[in-house]
Length: 348
Image 1 (cartoon, rainbow, N blue to C red):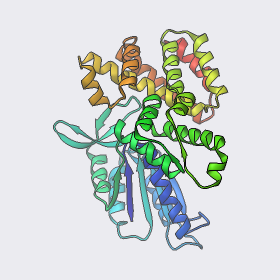
Image 2: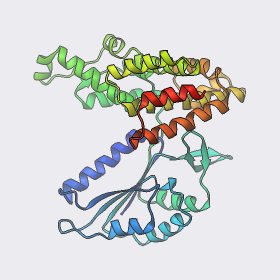
Image 3: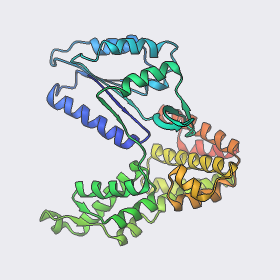
Image 4: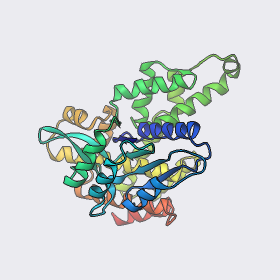
């Protein structure tokens, strides 16, 4: 069996992947010995074949997850892998391909698969990876996780809160989206924070099995766009080369419990938004056109437009490339975020 999970909404895609892994562990191999994850960006057909063919004393089949195969630079990997997979369709083993750097997009008048780079740019797949994508997307269990619109995100907030034992109206869910942005990773954290706060206020209500209600007041008090505003303030400080203010904002975020990786993800997201807005401005697009094309909340677009005017598109692209390098260094233990932000400011 071959499963293909792809699309730019990495939160829902990752959620589905985890569900499938948990189901396999529960129903096939509780020991976990028959489940393996392969870094598709660096793998070879030999490694994939070894993982699929590895035997286990405890399970009749294996689950192999291959992540980000379309980032692989191997010359023949896509051709060889396609030939290999065509023989695996009827196998008892389960192969899951997970990739949040690939999505479907309308280009040149038709829908086609495109790769998303670190700057948020999209580029049609070339012939060899395109053939592999067509094969994977044609499988019975292929699913694309598209980015949600603001309205869809508000509905997601409402359903997610209800699944965790809380109630929130659609208008209040929309308010939370307006303040936090439509990044599901961040919204997931905000929902947990709000529910925890309300549960602490009304422990008897929770004890009696009743749902807590998230009101506008709590959203204003606990969220208030503070994180988004601080990211805006941080990018402002970076653009002004105000090292002291940038470090002060970072310190405040660390004190509030924000993780290094999460902060870097949000900073990168903000500069990617600025780069997209800058491109739209250079193309002469109106605010209405940008709202439609970029799928940003009006609040984010308004603030982002003012910031994007402080940079050229080329400057923003250089910053994004540097942020990508910083992400790798942070994840591989080659640096810490404060010193890297310091170097970023000095390089402008």
